Amino acid sequence: MYVGGCLCGAVRYEITGAVSNPCFCHCASCRRATGAPTVPWGTFARDAMRLTRGRLTEYRSSPQVWRGFCARCGTSLTYRHEARAAEIDVTLATLDDPTRLAPLMHVWVKDRLPWVSIGDSLPQLPAGTIAT
Ligand SMILES: [Zn+2]
Ligand SMILES: [Zn+2]
Image 1 (cartoon, rainbow, N blue to C red):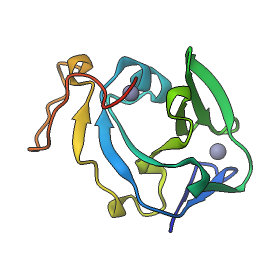
Image 2: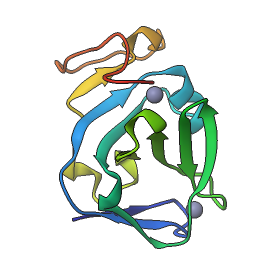
Image 3: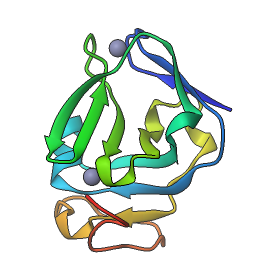
Image 4: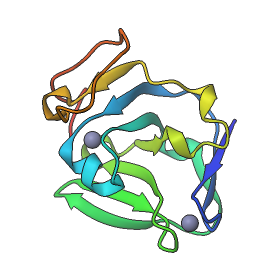
């Protein structure tokens, strides 16, 4: 089980089950949504994630994409793509213990900022694994 939440504590979640495709996303949309140059994500079964406190506010950032965040403090928490309705992506840095799940690849590297240098040997995909 994984537990996590937003900065202010108004939204808390727990996840049971395994992660897939943990990655750093360098896309311009994640960048703008979070204010960070790259964002670590993990994909879980949608029904494996459950809110234990508060609720997500969602913003439609692309025609099929809903980004979930805390309306009080703004922490980015989730990403849902309608083409992958059975899954949900969670920002791995919002886990209470983020050391438990490490990204295994970089995606959308074609959007990488020139002042971000990738210093690991993980695979680098020019675009996404499935969809934006
Ligand atoms: Zn919050
Ligand atoms: Zn992204």
